[in-house]
Length: 278
Image (cartoon, rainbow, N blue to C red; front, side):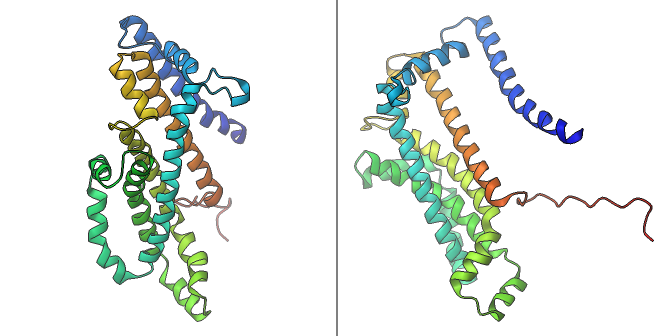
């Protein structure tokens, strides 16, 4: 009985709360009656006509979606993938050496503390405005959460396991694959989720700068200059949906690789046997 009720208890709040928020937004927009605060129905209808009313052979994507939506998705996915790869590799290398981690820790903390949007003008000077500049700003700003969390996870390996690995004469590659990486995975995914949100923010911010020719951020600025409020709201909603979809995909991958083993989750207590101990 309880096992059947559990999915309803978990699914219904996840579906009901967003639907309730959208309904409240719809009622508030109707009551307010301003062009600056449109209803969700009008925003969704406009977004559908703007991006998803194309031919079936092109997955219903319009010319506007191909010109702006796909390049932005490509930048955020490519930047996030490069940041994740560099962060995991460098984090594994630093975490295995206490001396190297102690020497690099001040630099890592300094780089993490710098606000990511503040670095975008630096990359505008180093690179020409375009995809290279945007990817560089995404990778450089999103790599630090993954790198620091990976290094911390590697340093948390049980010393007894390291002694057993030394007694078994495991090679460095075997230690990384069998000891360090599995122990660091929960913290790696914690860093990846932070990195994903930073990648999306930096993608939009880099496309707001002059010299950008396409992208969601470019479309947002263009709509603001034309006072196209429905497009502005549609872009904002689209960014929220894209962020939610990417985060859900990352959470699904985390559950696939880690199962029930997550950082900070206490083990389930064992149920005492009836009748007491004998």
